[in-house]
Amino acid sequence: MSLFRKNKRNIKKPQLLTPSKLVKEKEDTPTSSSLMVRLEEVIGLFGNNDDLQIKHFKIFGKFSSASIYLSSLVNQDAINQDILKPLMYEPEHLMGREKPLNHLINLILTETIYHSQAKIGENIGELIEVILRGETVIFIDGINEAIHIDTKKVEKRSIAQPETEQAILGPREGFIESITTNISLLRYRLPTPDFQVKTMKIGTLTKSTVAICYLKGIANEKVVKEVEKRLSEINIDAILDVGYLEQFIEDNPFSPFPQTQSTERPDKTVANLIEGRVGILVDGSPFALLVPVVFNQFYQTIEDYSSRFLMGTFVRLARILALVFSLVFPSLYVSLISFNPELLPTEFAVAVAGGRAGVPYPAVIEVLIIEVAMEILREATVRLPKQVGGALSIVGVLVIGQAAVEAGLSSPITVVVIALTTIGSFATPTYTAAFALRMLRFPIMILAGIFGLYGVMVGIIFIFNHMLSLKSFGVPYMAPVSPENYQGMKDVVIRSPLWWMPKRPGFLQPSNQNRLGQDDNKVLEHNKVGNDQREDAANGGSKGDHDTSGNNNLN
Image 1 (cartoon, rainbow, N blue to C red):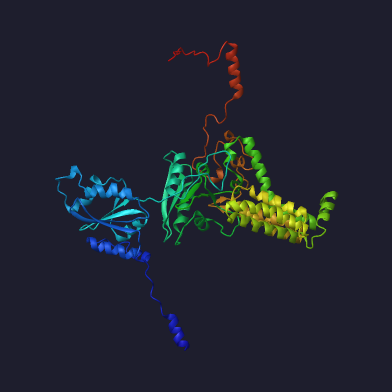
Image 2: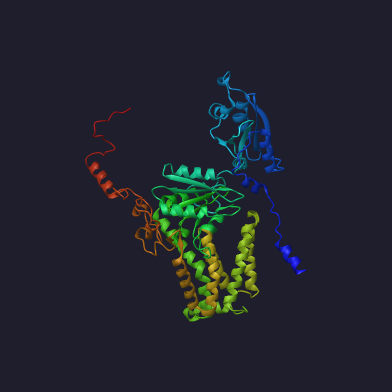
């Protein structure tokens, strides 16, 4: 009996040949010259697809042909007007001319079809792939080669304001799911031949188009080649979003901190490309992936640079303070209440002790319970429809919080601390960075509940050591703070004026470091302008009133 089971395990089941595997086997198979044979091959590979359309017709009323396309992916009007009509009705300039079969394809491509993107295909695997991408294939009886023409048309949403990166100042355009539209948004802002786009196909089933965007002469060529290398090594059946790529190309996948930055703003992408970074786009995703990144990028916004530097600096400082609050505020509260109440003012300590008089468990357990409840409430608010989500958040904060205090499950000061912490996490512009801080709050709170302030300091030191060890495509994660870079330090805590930052961040090692002109990197010399105006006024006029060049003719 055991021998029978062993032999049964050794029997290999026959491999099921799916249509995609059959297409892969026919990648290098040349097409037949017989029209009916090729149609049977295509129908056999596609199976029972109702949107597969085959139309038989005669080119110039003489040569038997057939067009094949997927009706769900093509522009039917373009097929009728630009392809079928000029092929079925012989043009006047071709009437009376001899049309040999061996020159027919060249005659069609150069003198007949009204379409700029027509190519020749030679094997059945290639032709199946172009049909799946929305192209129309034309088979001609007696000719091995086939013509495929780009007639793709897929419905897409219009360009709208980004949902995840709201801005008061700055452009209102955001990426959409179409990669061609996204590239056009970048080219619109970068009308220079230095803007380079390299594409590749990733995903054995989805065959998603991935575009690598960078500025030649600014981006470091080693970084560009490393991005191409990492992407080319990905072997997966489906790429549906840039998040799939992020998990394959990041340096440390076990770190809670993101080592790439995703954005749906074209202006932010262009700003990073100009600094020397590389952008990655995926067809079907409304986000761009930016590499390499450093930590200070995650609390910066496009508004910092669209507004005056004093305003941008003040808002950035408030953002950094909120970031620190979201990480350590609950832990400091737990450590001070549980281990070091002597550090609190007497009146405040008495008020806190009175508020916690009826709470039946330690402060660390209380904070953990409220934090978990807030995380559940936050996730529920995100997943619900907009009409219901706002109401749920208000009900959750007011009703549940008040009920917990009155029931003695939590103290009022704990609810205030958790509320400030949650608000601080919302102030972090980048969702992935805010999520990392949300995750790290819990281990630091546990350390604070066990060791007090020592536990908080140990947790913070551990986090900083981990961040110092991270790299993103060879760039230290904490640059320009460590290693120190003078030019980069001008845009870390404060947002220096643009004319104080004449060079690009050195930690990116851009090929061209100069960002401003070499002659004059300052703004208008207002005092000098004022003195010139006063001198002109003392002389009885100004340069605007009198033309001393002698060309004072009025039109």
